[in-house]
Amino acid sequence: MSAPSDNYTYSTLEVATENDRIRHGLYPEVAPSSEPEAYGYYAPPKTEQQNAQFSDSTPRSHINSTAYTYSTYPEVAQGGGAAPGGAAAAVGATEPKKICGLRRRYFWFALAAAVLIVVAIIVGAVVGTMKSHSSGSAADKGASEGGNGNGGDNNNSNNNGGTNSTASGKLSLYGDTRLASANFTDAYGNDNYVLIYQLSDASVCMSTFNSSNNKWVASTIVNGTEGIKLGSSLAVNTIWQGSNSPEVDLYYQSNGSAATIEYLIYKSNDNLSTTSVTPPDKWVSVNSAKGFNTLPGSALVSYGKQCDFCNQYAYLFWQGDQGIFMTELSATGIGDVNLIDVSTVPSANTSMALTYSGTLTGDTNAILRRSIDIFYRSTTSGLTQLRVGNGLNVPMYVGRDIGPRTNFAAFSTGFNESAASENPNPLGFQVLSIDPDVDNGVQLTYLKDSKWTVGSDEVEALADCRAKATMAVNTGRRLYCLVDSGDNDTGVEIIEWAWQGDPSDTDTYLNWNKIGAVDVGV
Image 1 (cartoon, rainbow, N blue to C red):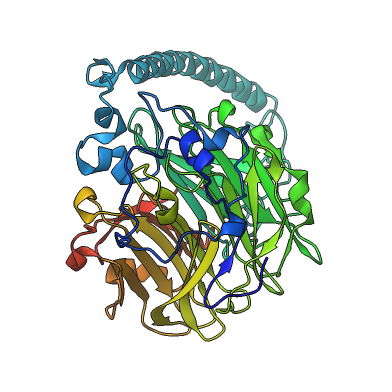
Image 2: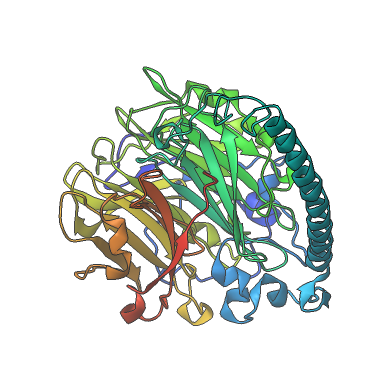
């Protein structure tokens, strides 16, 4: 990594060459170089950076367009706002055939379940009748032999094998778990949400949601006996694979004197199901990540390719003793670790939130507009945006000062296009922050029309998030907070909210709808 130059430095993130642009089809429209960028921090990359290349063998960077595609942006799923009704409607897909208002697959599942229930009731009734008759005969026999009706045994044992399940012995959601979330819209237009958390035994678990059945399904990814740090930072991302199921990357920290990063992959060809339990053996460990150490309390944030013209490949970011580090993950393996050497130094163990800005237009300047965006607290207490892309790392103070224990979450809206007239959904950012040491609840800082604004009003709809000050959000505009449950057995629960805002109307930015508790399986 080179030394700082003015207010930005060069990174190892991909820089497009002319061959790369052509190979990825980034040439239909060319914006004049004199035209100002809607949200551009960058000048074109310098000459010595032009030699960086993509790997031709990397499937993540070159995926053919098909009639059915997965997505993460709500705007992409809705055809850029022009075609409501989800991804299937936007691409002209045929509406699935239904029986009695249900898709055929779900109708037959429901019918089969109904038949099984009827059979179970009949069998249960028969067995119950037989047991009742048998018990009556045994009681009569015991009484005739001078017994007490318990088979001749005078010991009134509860017959539970000596076990007594108490509240303190139950497995529960860890009271200080970190949270991580991702989302995608599948080829049928269904919204899918992925939430990662820890249980009280340190197990790393996942709950998934699919809007086709409106149900959460909980799965264990890694058992807590496998050396996981209790209270580990967590990061998860999906990697867009066109018409195929997305790949899912998961990161957490091991339990040891050095907080080593553990990296798991759920591969695309295993077809992640969000409607059934995910087998833990489908997650593949990547051993080469085990040499990466973090500060003990470091946050982990990650990114995977999200759309055709979004940043390519996958990236992991964490904090070490010198600052924020990053590595690239592609089909050729894990890249070198690089320090993001910027003048706006992050404070120790700062919260970090990651989102991204994409572009719909595949012109030659697309690489100048797409970026990975990380938010952190600087040593000067400023909420800072670090824009990573096109070979540069650009930090920017966004106008809000925050305390050292502030937790925040961020998501983007719209796209970063050269011409405002061609962009029905201009780029925006929503950054939510909670400072547990200040009694002002959840605060909002947002970007609209290329300008940052610091909100002064509390997001009252998210008042329940204040006490635990732990939250995560995804680009599907679903927010998850750790909340005191009032239940002595569990202590905490994860509550989900859906953003009801309109990116074009700032008066709606504080509108959140409480959905309810996430099923974590305990």
